[in-house]
Length: 136
View 1: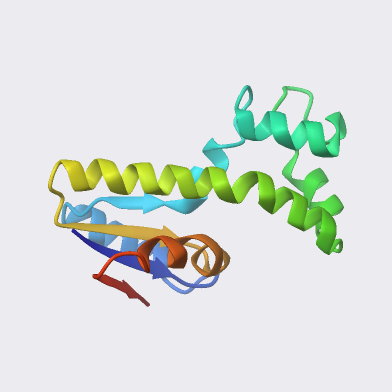
View 2 (view 1 turned 90 degrees about the horizontal axis):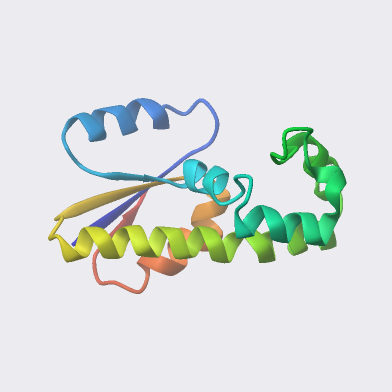
């Protein structure tokens, strides 16, 4: 199986490219969606974040207050490290399981749609393990 990493900054056309890829039938693993899934109410990710940062990072409906959490971690490297320690392993595990599922059924090509930071931290470490990879 080949894994293609698609990355880029804001307004670079990545979403347009993903739509074209999906229309062609190639599965796309969306890291932004994964990052949102791992912090859904009731998830171990959100529970760990609340344990680390307190209930002030929750909205009234029990979902993550992203802006509130952002204020905590934006200018504090140590707080950001704590958040990454919670989220990155969960994101990585989800990507690996998705890749494994595609491998098992014989999917010839999978695209990982990832923000630049995720590529640097997560995706590059996953796909470097195989022989076939490409990042652009």
